[in-house]
Image (cartoon, rainbow, N blue to C red; front, side, top):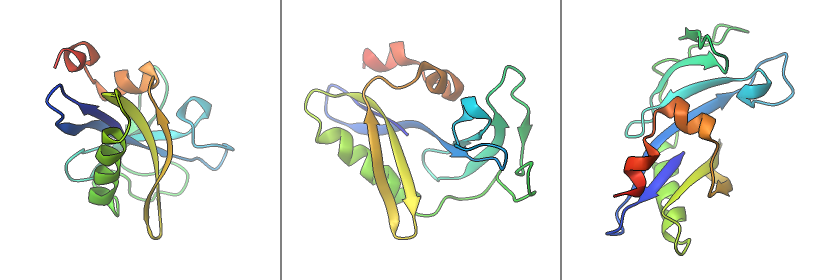
Length: 135
């Protein structure tokens, strides 16, 4: 999840994506063969998933077992959004961060805060960082 706080203190989710594992991969990292799916930042609805490659072949289902990915609504999404925005507000002087949030049976849990998130993820999400930092 990418969160931003403007000069007036308004915090918002700029974008988010879900990392999805594959049976042939030890980790869900897309650079290691996992999948990624954009998340609608307002609703938590997943878009089609793709592998992290120049081709970006999108699919509405998981290629290993056929479970639906596209159009699925993530559980606890509103709580995850609130956690993301609250996290940024408690970090003095931090206006933008990439957050790794896990969703477990009881709700969202913060895994880590990246104050210099990967430019690959920002590019995939089409987040215009130059415009963000001038806000």
